[in-house]
Image 1 (cartoon, helix red, strand yellow):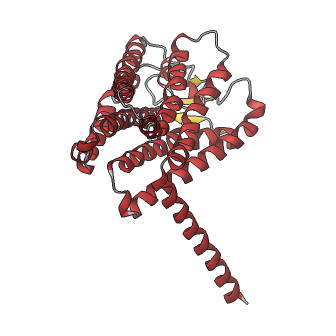
Image 2 (cartoon, one colour; image 1 turned 120 degrees about the horizontal axis):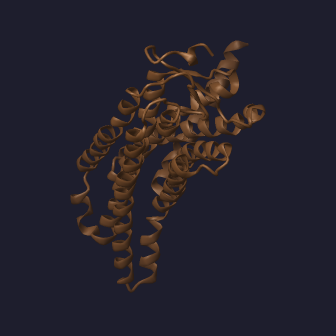
Image 3 (cartoon, one colour; image 1 turned 180 degrees about the vertical axis):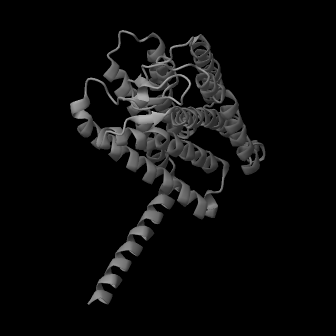
Length: 328
């Protein structure tokens, strides 16, 4: 603990405590978290591989799904390996620079994820309300540019967060009661004035998430208005079915995320381990389920993924049999 009690003139070292109050259950909690993480990596990597290899999937919709998959991989990888090291090997220490790097990638990839959901909402609006011009409005090049805008926006908005924390003084109590470096969790262990970090974090959540939710809500309001004008019930059902996957991903992304953000600031009455477990699940379960949701609800992608897995499995069995014959 000597490193944790470093003076403000030295590079502080933080101690991530994991889940206070449930230390004895860390190993059991780590089992489902590790399974969720491995599943998320495999599922999202499979989607990226299939879309990259299949020429017929080089369309704006699948490009957006790839953006979502990539942001999910970065989000989960930015904190889960360290969390598992805490649970399995009791490796709790992390330097200030390491902590702020983790925070930046974690928050920036989450911001990109939110931006991609906005692009997907606009995509569904154009596909349903202006289908004849869909291919001219949303081209691959334009979709890629929108993705780049999401990335630049995330970097510009998130970068001040670790910079504000970098200049805070840290004295003797550098123990963070969490599994990863969250903005407010780090700010609360500072012995300086954290008003700037607190206000910026709250403004960021309100402005960025507020803007994204407003655009998504507006898109679906226009979609609903267009659907109400359709006389064919079958056409209504077909149009709604194209939005099902996106709506499910939105429901997984925002409610739990808002709860986690607000709990750090106003949730003094919430049991700490409830907040920590819920925040970990929020950032690992959606990355695991998102590719499954889009795979189930998107026929073309589902067929290509099944074919890809079939070829991979067949090749693996063939290589195993060939190796077995060669051995004897």
